[in-house]
Length: 462
Image (cartoon, rainbow, N blue to C red; front, side, top):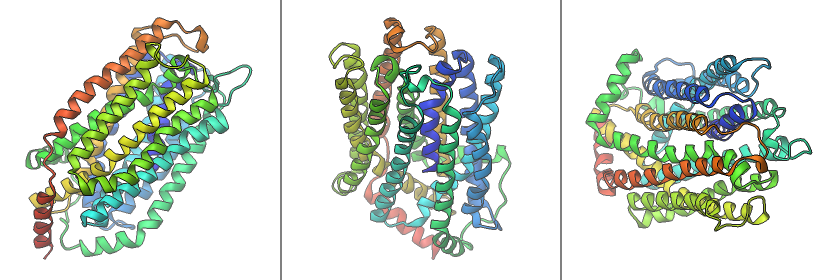
């Protein structure tokens, strides 16, 4: 939940806030976002190996880094939404760079150990599907907080700002509120899993490798070896990179689309931005039954292609004049409907994905003879962060390239700028869809294979 609160608040609001509200140049903004997210992606493998190999931590190898991550994340994320006034272009860029690095690098040492715990809580296939479902329900409940808090309490319409997200005043309070909710979730997660994790780590003490964390060159070398030894790791990395490439593109430009293409008001924004997550929760609940009846790869492929198709329609139809007119009640319900159904099929993808990631962690442990769930989780997260970095760079430079105007009201924005921005998102969706269909077909994650892996792990622990 904390990672999703941070990720969605970042994706939905940071690009829009710094480009359309503060007025940071698109090329500078793209570079800053790419630097932050690239650094985040590079530190994640180290966070995973630190957690895997940590010995003697006062709260154990998972909970110690999770607790220590709370303060730097909170300081950095509050600062992201509170830049001082009077800074020039380079000053704003520097502020976002430093604050963003502190926030995102800090929470990496919470998120990666938290993901690694998923592989350790249970090795039963049915329980793992349940764990994946519950984790993703928690994620989506957290994500619901982002637009509800934003558009219900802060970015409300006024005479001066009919589109409340163009008002610079509420952003600082909004950032502090999201941070407080995320910190509360961190503490609840640590306390809630404390007893079970302590039992697991005491049982694994003799099995786990007792080495100190390696320096940065070592863990990158280890990650490279893991990719060669267990090919499913690189397939998973490419898969999550492509999925997040599409989602981050849609999320980071959603406020641009809602403000200028769909022209939604605050109430409509709240409905649209929560519709996908409501659908995702429904899909998560339904997906457990689908996973029992069909192969995980099939459920993943159908869910992803359905999600991308509905995202495409929600943009292409209004662009072609085949949807209700911008600013009407109908356009809000049309986009919300696309996102609701898209969220449902995306939820059907998330449950088998969660189980597949845990299966791959087991496969790698069977190959190496030692638990490396943190490393595998870091590889998964590396794909996520790399995609966000690419999207931040592309989106910032694209806004600069087409000279997208800053701070205009919805009815003042030139149509050619809106069309260019919409086409950019549509092209990304099409390219990603083709890539995903190809990579999912190469995943080797059958139920029979997992049965053999479980037998091998039982031998190792004996």
